[in-house]
Length: 249
Image: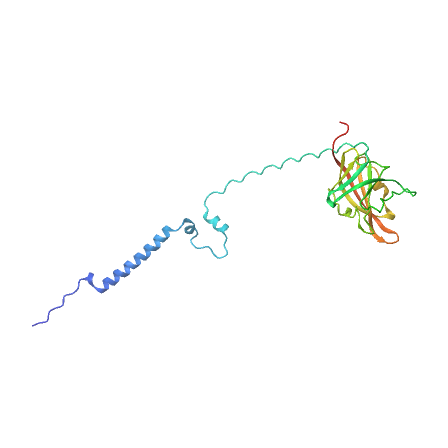
C-alpha cells in the first residue's frame, strides 16, 4: 500500500506567519503606548520636551511654559511733595532755667545760676553735687534771643559727673531747658567741638548769632593732676521748639 501523501499546511497556520504576526502586534502596541503617554502628558512637560536639568530654576521653567502675556507695568506714583520746614519759634521772654534734660545721654539735672570770677571767667558748679548744671545768669536765658551758656563737670574724684556723655551727642539730638515760667525751650544740636583751653575761641562760642542759641560746655582733652584738663568740649545748638503754656494768653 503506497504511503499517504502529507497535506501542506495553509499559509496562515505556518510558524513563520504566527511569529511575524506576534512581532507586528508587539510593535503596534509599543508605538500605541508611546503615543498615548505623550497625549496624556501635561502641557508644560510637552512644551519643554525634557525634564529640567540639575541646577535649573523655577524661574527658567516659568519663562518657558507660561504663555500668558506679562501684566502691564503700573506707572510709578510721583514722590509726595516735601513739606516746607516749620518756621522757627519766636524768642521767649526772660525766665531763669530750672532743669536741663538731654534724653540721649540720660541727663535730667537741676540748673543753678553762676557768675564770673575775678579773672572774668565763668565759675564752675560746686563739686559737692556733680549732678548740678550751671547757667551764666548775666547772659541770655534759654529761649531768649542770644546765646545761653550752661556748664557742667565731666567727672569728679568719685566718678563721672553730669556732662560725662556730652561728647556722644551728634547733630539732631535734642536738649530741653525747663524754665521757671512753666515753659520748655527745646534746642537741636548742630555740632560738638573740642578746643584747647590755651586757644579757646571766645567769639565763636559766646558770640550772638541773631537767634536764640545754646552752648553746653564741659572739660576735655588730656588730664593733668596739677593743672586739670587741657581742653573743653562744646555743644552748639539752636532754638527749635517751645513746650508748655504761654503765660501771655
